Image (cartoon, rainbow over all chains, first blue to last red; front, side, top):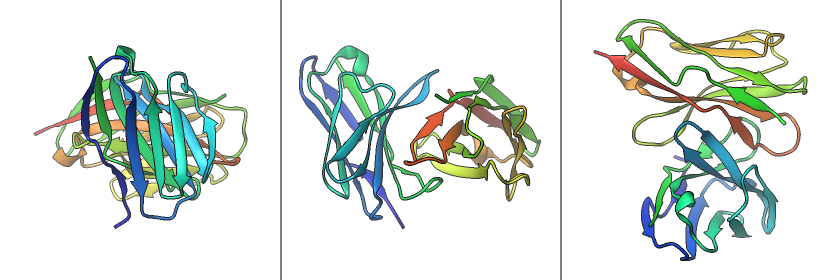
Length: 111
Length: 115
């Protein structure tokens, strides 16, 4: 069964800490995405990548960066975590429209 | 930029009944994709059904079907013979036909199936 794995399901970090959220897919997909999910706001795209070392900003990139050194791995980085970044983060991968596969999500609480 | 609107934050229905979730969208593109995703309490997002805008026939997947009205930019999801396992958040999403496969999501509808 194809999978997108988010290694950290629940994290609690302090304000100002650097946070890494890791996502790995085993489907050889070119495209990978990071979304943020908040109640009443749905899912909003933070960043996406369509190839190794390639990235593009989504709708809410401020305060985030990403890294894609290998095809299967896409990392979301919060350089200096703030309380307004407390949220659920979802990673997804795809190879064409309609093939998005999502991870189980990472709950991040910043205190 | 595309927008997706789900005007029903919460819905509930008795088991075995039929329920319809609404979704409208706005785009200037003529060919695109529309999706309904389900997110159960376990949080794993699952694709329920997809519709390609150039296809006039409404998509169906077992108990799930859509009513796609391209001119009205409406894309509703009908769940027939609802089951307890249908309890979840449902998200409507828009996918462009150009370039990458990023999605624009609505705000979601929380559906509860009552036994």
